[in-house]
Image (cartoon, rainbow over all chains, first blue to last red; front, top):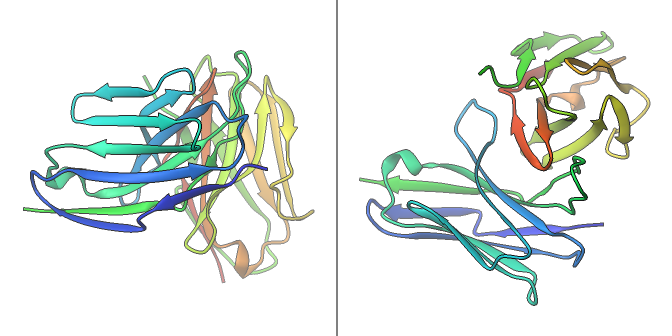
Length: 115
Length: 111
């Protein structure tokens, strides 16, 4: 089955710096890679996702890149702000048509942004 | 729009008792997922349904766990009997297509 590795487990940056979180996956059939942000006491919130037919996707200060050959994908947050502090999870899945499929999650990265 | 609704938000019970967690998915979503989150194991899928039909329950720890989805707007996860190692946060998520939206979770403590 699919296995997702995520690094680093913790990341501390100064406000305004960039943060990069990296994930690798094992199953070449995986074709959907979402990223979730989880704040303390809340459920994971989908922040950006990418499909395997795209190499990069941006949404304001966040971007995700995908390298299918190497089976790795990364989350990039630019101009970090204290409110970006949270636990970030990557995930991988093989999606078919319109049916839901299970997400396999990485272990998470705790991002701390200090002002 | 209301998101995924879970109840209760917190549950404290004694070992051996039955526990029922409830989930109302987002209206119009056709898939529902139950996840469990612990420090040791992270976020792991327990079971998911497509159009109210269980598709994959391979993540359900053992026979003490069961899940039902009697209709498109309601699902339950039951643990009977509960054990201290079941203590975790249980999340329900729903989707239409592939984007999954999570509820706020139920924090279960079994003493």
